[in-house]
Image (cartoon, rainbow, N blue to C red; front, side, top):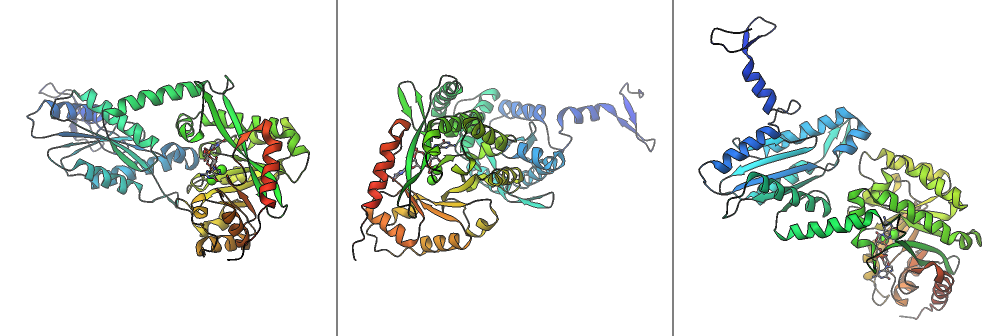
Length: 458
Ligand code: C2E
Ligand code: CA
Ligand code: CA
C-alpha cells in the first residue's frame, strides 16, 4: 500500500503499518541468521571509513571458521547454524560497540576497526575467544578459527586492496595451522605465488607418475631384526626429490592428498607385494593424513586397493596422528574401526607431541603407539632415567598396545629403549629410507645393526 507521502508501507499482523523501504534496507544489508551486517554492509562501511576524514589507520580483520563444513556434514545444518551464531556473539563481545562486524558468507566474518588501537591485540583476543569450546548437539566441540589482518599504512589503499591483503593473510594463517591470526606482509605475495606454483605442479603429480615412495626399516625386539618398513613419500619434481614436509601441507589444504594418498598406498602395495607375501610376519606402515580420514570412502578405498594388489590386510598398519581425532570425529573413529575389523592395525604417530593425553589412549581405536623422536633425543648415554617414557611404555602395555620408538640414531639409544620395554625401533641407526629396489639391503642392514647391539655395563 502507498501512504500519503508516496512511501510504500506494509501491514503487520496486528494491523499497524511499517515503512517497507526500511525493511528492504534491512534485508539488503543484514544477515538473517546472525543479525550482523552482510557483505554489502561491510563494503559500504569500509568505503565510508576510507573516504571519511582520516583519524588514524583502518584495520580489516577477516575470519574463517575452520571446521564449519565438517560440523555441517557430520552434525547437520542446525549445528552449523548454532556454531555461526555462537561465533558471531563471541565476536560482538570482543569489539567496541561502534566497531563494524559483518558476516560475509557461510563461515566468513569481517571486522572493521578504525583509529589508533592495537589491532594485533584485538585479533589475538578474537582468535582466543572463538577457539574456546562450544557445546553443539550436547557434545563439547573445540572450534578453530583463522584470522587475517591488514591495515592502511601511510599511503591510502582502495578497499579492494585492503580486503585482498587481509585475504592473503588469512590464507597464510590457514596454511600455518589452525587457530591463529596473521598480519599481512608484502613478502606474502611472493610466497603465495610460489605456493600456487607448487600446488599447480602437485595437481599433476599422480598422473605424471612423480610420486615416489621410500621405505625405512623398523626392527622388532621379539623377532630380533627388521620385519616392518614405513612407507615415506617423496615428490620427484623439477629434477629434485621434494621431501614430504615441503608439500604434504599444500596437498592437504588443496584436498589433493586424497588422490596422492591412494597413489602412495597403491605403489606401496605393488612394490612390497612379494616381500610381504614372503613372510606373513612382515608388515608395512603407511602414513595417513587427517584429511584422508574424513573422506567418507576412505575405508572402502583402502580395502579395495589391498584386495586389488593381493595384500593381506593384517600386514598393513596405518599411521595417524592424534590431530586426526577432533571431538566430533565419529566418522574417523568409525572408518578406523571398520578397517581394524578387517585386521588392519592403527598406529598413533608422533605420540607425546601436541595435545596427546595418556587418558585418551583407552578410547581411541589404536593398536600401536609410536613414541615421538623428541623422547628418544633425550637419551644421550643410556644412563638417564626417563620417567615419562617409562610410564608411557608401561601404560601402553597395560592397555595391550605395542610401542614403537622412532628417531633412534645411536646404539646407546637403541639399548636403552629396549631396556625400557619398547617393542620396535626405527631410526637412522638401523637405516635411512630407501627406494624399493634396495629393500633387501635395507632389511639386512637393519637386522645386522640390531644384532650387533651389545649392552655395556654402566
Ligand atoms: P613421520 O611419520 O614422523 O616420519 C618419520 C620421519 O623421520 C621421516 O622423515 C624419516 O626420514 C625421519 N627419520 C627417520 N629416522 C630418523 C632418525 O633417526 N633421525 C631423524 N632426525 N629423522 C629420522 P620424512 O620422510 O621427511 O617424513 C616427514 C614426515 O612427512 C613424516 O613424519 C610424515 O608426517 C610425513 N609423511 C611422510 N610420508 C607421508 C605419506 O606417505 N603420507 C602422509 N600423509 N604424510 C607423510
Ligand atoms: Ca609416520
Ligand atoms: Ca612420527
